[in-house]
Length: 492
Image 1 (cartoon, rainbow, N blue to C red):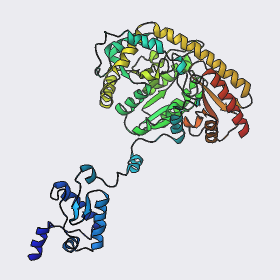
Image 2 (cartoon, rainbow, N blue to C red; image 1 turned 30 degrees about the vertical axis):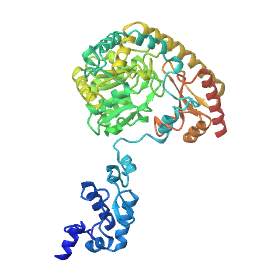
Image 3 (cartoon, rainbow, N blue to C red; image 1 turned 135 degrees about the vertical axis):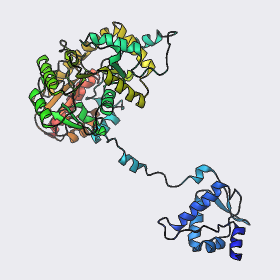
């Protein structure tokens, strides 16, 4: 009893000892115990700790083990040695009490559900922000083509007229959906505002579809190559991407029918107008064939029409949605490729029950698109300024296409093959001889040129490059193509 009373007098526990059989080392158990005593206030600041000999005897441990524990606490700033007082509590700050080994964040990153981009795509995303780099593959309008002044005028005209900067209703701001509905009629699409969901772009439309109406493990048919192979939006939702071959008119109907019969598929994702990355324009006849197959197989279609208005020689055939008589097609449109990627406004059109479901999912993820962006987009679409802007963009892209094609004819006539695109942003350049595409990417980057190699759109492709004439300045476009031709000649 005398020993127990002495321990109580010294402030040592009568019912606690370190567990020498536990996985945690004894000295760490002592560190945790003393931290708990300090945190609870039992051992306040300036309180002297019991003598080391008494603690070691009470806990049945070697003094060397105790000293290791106390040194750890001293290193964390919780105790200190004071002449004449022994060891005292010096701090009870919570930030120190909770200090210790940081979380193993790398393991969290490795265990995350969303797959990482490939190394090349991560490099592209990283170097696109470098102003010294010539972006030869970027699928955006050049900063020189963005309508800064017109957008400023629109925003300035809103002075005194803003009535709502809060959250909009789930489907998006009604006046914008009404403007989109009116605009879609010029594309041959009849859609009421209730059949339209405002999204931040075509990519969000894909995410909502994969999360909202498809089951995990569903098969997604799509052109091969395809922009989607460079993303993880469907893979992160456990979808299976099932490639369908193409020809110069677009997705091949017999291959589509065969794929549907051989594998259970939930959806066809297609970019029929100025396809990304090949630039192919699906012919009117081919569109009718694809629609007939999907109607027969009851296979829904997700049509990505981000480039449909960017025809350069003559308008392309109407969208698949304009041919849809059975509510088969979900139609995704966007202002990112035609007006401004920074506006972050697009839409998805479909049967109202589907749109209601996607709107509900969207509200769970971002609570609606930017109110200010929706107001600006409505002002663009309600007046003929958008059609005038499109005419200017087409004229500029026509000139840029000519520059790119002339440079290719001059420096790539014996290195590659290509088709002159009828619209969109891209030339799908096929190298006549295979080379190490990753090595070419790295060597071009060392020269200040950022490429989009074909293998990011089809991992088996070592022969193609996606050449964009939409982004780089005209003089940089010529320079980059010349340097690229020299790199190819060096490698061959």
